[in-house]
Amino acid sequence: MLRVVPKGWLSRGFEILEDDRLVTTVRFVRSTGAAEFTLGDATYAIRQEHPGYASWVLEIGGRAPARARSVRTLFRDSRVIEYAGRRYQLTSRSAFRRNLTVQEGVQFVGYIESERVFSKTLNACLPESLPLAVKVFIVALAVNPWADQDEIM
Image 1: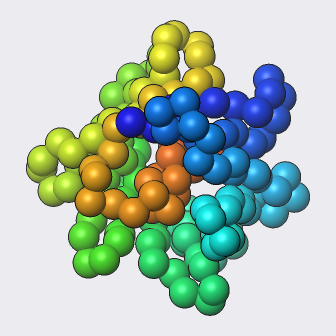
Image 2: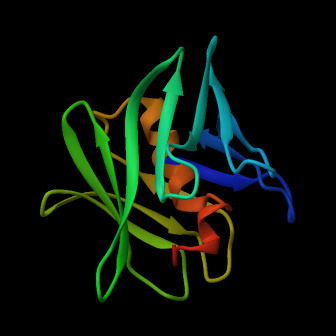
């Protein structure tokens, strides 16, 4: 399980811990809405795929191993993440807490939820089959400050 801790009350960055060990720090760029994090020697970028659209891409070395897009329906908004030919859906469960489910098709495979009401610290339980970089990408989609302007998550 990953623990997501904001860097500060007004900060747009956050740390991801696993078993109380720092895994990475995600830093958001205020002007562009992009994000960046490092795992080992590799630096990853998260950016809007097409500026002005609700779609994001995870990039490393010119490659895009994962993509996401927002899907709006009459009753709820969600994000669809595509990685290695598989599709995961990130959907909000609550209007009062940051509680999200992660599904593959109709099967529940994980969750991201706040520790308590109004807490910015999150716990994320995501499929073990996903690489850590994709897990960080999914968490960043759940907490990204640039999407809060046009999304309900």
